Structure formats: structure tokens, C-alpha cells
Image 1 (cartoon, rainbow, N blue to C red):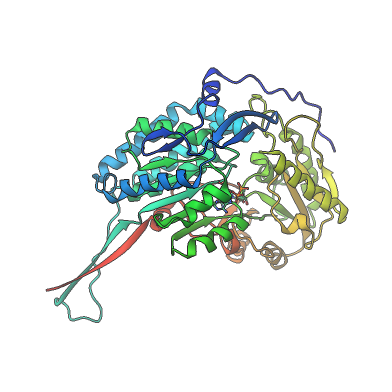
Image 2 (image 1 turned 90 degrees about the vertical axis):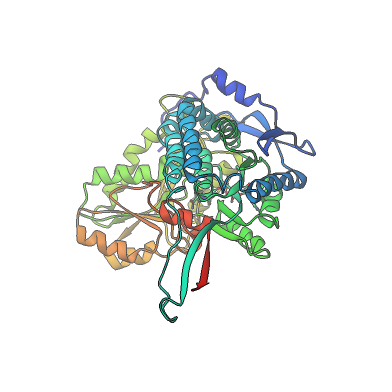
Length: 502
Ligand code: NAD
């Protein structure tokens, strides 16, 4: 089924956005805007139109070395880590306040850059980014070691205690799907722990990270604590990962790149956290309100055009309600018909790039060739932007690439099941383990499935809910370590054990 015809006209950009687009392509290093050493540039597109709207600097090896040196100096002289935690907290809170004060402008930039509806960015990305910083700021003054009593030593002969110290200089590399939110999720725990950092946004979506740098300067962070460099992954990103003066790498992105980074960071034994891909199941049990669950299953995949690491991309509905769940998802799909990101009626925007459009359409075609049938969508409406209609595929089997691989688009594959063990086995039949949704009113079934599913997060009667206080991360090839919550700050701390002979 094809969606109703829509006008693909991107409304005009505001004056503030035009100003941000016209900024000189520079890097934020040591508290200053500096030119790149070689002057190479990267085009930035508006996915709603496919037009180039700005250019950013493509950081050279020399630029990366300069950024790392700035972060190293700022770490080594203690200008951040030795500051009273109360003061660090205060500066971080000031940054969160500034993000909120500039929410409208940042949401527009995110919409123009990533393609997501501005309304979604206002509701999710910008408040999410600010709350990541607010939450972690509170940890700055609550970190400390322990004084365990020695176990095998005579009591009173030896005093032992632990100190928690910041890990050092962090390289933080983020993807394009939630650019500002991911950036703030990365910098917040590092800053609270007393680390300094170099942040690299994705080449497709640098605009809000650059604006963040302006706000960092305004918030009063000492020079060199936060450095923000734009550049390509395989050059600038790679240089950061291998750099001997970087102590820790935090990466969010694809599992393939995560594996490469893991190998490249090993030589210098860098601390490493990885938030990677997913192929998350949504399980609908027969006792649900079908309309509600179908709506939930649709949001689980169509939110952010399916470009969500925890997107509910595999739908498992009980055989007795399979047809009505499919009808329910297809019935709400038109509400998710893509529109330009600044159109106030937009609920879903285009995909981020032409590359991503080709990738998603390639999967849909491969699915059809392998025998999948299209329940709704399956096409890219003609336009200059990168639009794909919300798509539901049925008649699939577990061997198909559309079932096994992360598509990262608004495409869900639907399958039937008969019993709990069967669906748990199917849900776990993947190399990923990031998220899973379970829809049922039966609390016993809910808990049984929570126990059986191998994933970092399980949602009951909802999907894609996150909170800065609750850990987020993946089982299996979906990642390493956790972000958010107390667990999210741990990777930014070393533990030093001290023994004193009494
Ligand atoms: P990507 O892996 O291609 O790129 C992510 C970042 O890594 C970019 O900044 C890129 O420049 C950089 N990069 C690329 N190659 C590099 C290299 N060799 N060395 C160092 N840096 C390099 O991912 P993407 O296509 O931008 O993002 C989509 C992927 O991100 C999906 O797989 C999605 O599931 C995943 N993701 C995961 C989470 C999570 O929390 N688990 C969240 C969002 C997105």
C-alpha cells in the first residue's frame, strides 16, 4: 500500500539556522576555533532536500594530534580534575541550562542535518541531551573509594583503601541518528569523572556538535577540557582510536566499525566502551489490546525513521492475532508517512543520506526477491530527499537478510509464533542483544520472557524508553559496557588501591 501524496517542500530555515550554516569550517581545540591544517572540507546535506547546505572541516592527522594534545595538557595540569567537584557540577549544569535555552535553534539544526522532524527533536533529542548532562553532573561530587577491611591480613596491621581517579583523555565518537543526544551522553560521564575529551560527531551530522562547542565556551569550561573536531571516521576517527595519548575510547555506531575500533585500540590497551547495532524483537502475546499493541509496534520501528539502535525491527505476533496485528500496524503506518523535517505535521522524516536510502531500499528489494510480501510501504516516494515509506514485510523466514541484518530504516519483518519457548528462541536467534519489547497483560508471562531474552534492555508494553539514571547497553555483539546510571560513569574511572603499614 502506498501512502497518500504529500508535498515535499522543506519550509525556510530560520535566521539562527542560516547563521549556523554559514559558520566558517573550523575545529574547536583548546577553547578556540582553529583552522584545519590542510583545509579539506566535508559537505553537509539536508536529507529533506538532498541539497548541500554547509561544509565542515575534515580534520587531518595533525589536527587530531593538536586536539589530543590540548586534552592531554588540560588533563595533566588538573585544571578540570582538581577543580572542586561542586564547581565542575555547576559548570555542567550551566551547559545543560544553555542547551535548554537554545532548544528551538538546536532542534531546528538537528532536523535540517539529520532529517528528523523538528518536533521530535524538541520533544526527545534536546531535552534528552540536557538531562544526560544534568544527571551526570550530580555524580561529580558523589564519587569516591572504599575502605574495605583486609581479609587475609592481621587486623590493625595494615590499612587499605581505594581511590577513584579519572581515566584521563577520552576519544568519543558518535553516530548520526541522535547527534546531540549521543554527544551529550558521551561527554557527560567523562566530565563528571574529571576526564578531558575529544568529541568527533558523525561526518553526516556535525551541526549541533559545533553549536555545542559555542555553548561549552559560554558555560565556562576551562580551555582544552572539551575539544570538538569534525572529520571522517576512517581518518580522523581512526587517528583518535590509535593515538597513544588517548586513554579511553567511547564509541557508538555500527557493530562492524565497533569491531575495527576494538582491534585498533588494543595495541595501546585503551579503556573501551562500545554501543553498537541491534535487531530488536517486539513480541505480542495473544492477551493484548491489539490496537494498542499494534500502535506500539509501529512506533517501535517507525520512530526516527527506524534509525534507532533499539528499533523494534522484528515483530513476533501470536498466531491467533497475527493478522489483526499486521492490519493494526498497516492502519497506523500512514500517520508515519515521511515529510520534510521542518514541516510541523511531520512525525517521520527522510533517512539521513542517499547512502542510507540505497541501503534500506536494497534490503527491501532483497527481501522481496527472497519471497517476502509487502504489507504496506516498500517504496521511496519520488522526491529530491531521502524518503522511504513505513514498510511492513510478511512471509519472511529466519534465513532472509531482512530478518537477520540491521536495516536501520523504517522496515519491520513480521513473523508468527505459537508458544513462549518458541518465541524466546526466535527472539534470541541473532548476534545482537540490545533491546526487546514484550506486549502482554500477563505478569507471569512478562517475567518469564524477561528472564529468557538475552538483551541489555527489555521493555514491557512500551519500547525505546530510556532514562539517564538507568544503564543502557548491549549483550552479545550489541556492545561492551554500559552507559547511563552509576554504571555509565564507572568506565571513566580507574581504581587505585592503597596499603599503609600501621
Ligand atoms: P558508523 O559505525 O558508520 O559510524 C559511527 C561513527 O564512527 C562516526 O562518527 C564515524 O565517523 C566513525 N567511524 C567510522 N569508521 C571509523 C573508524 N574506522 N575508526 C574510528 N571511527 C570511525 O555508524 P553509523 O552508520 O553512523 O550509525 C549507525 C549505527 O550506529 C547502527 O548500527 C546503530 O545500531 C548504531 N547505534 C548504536 C547505538 C547504541 O547505543 N548501541 C545508538 C545509536 C546508533
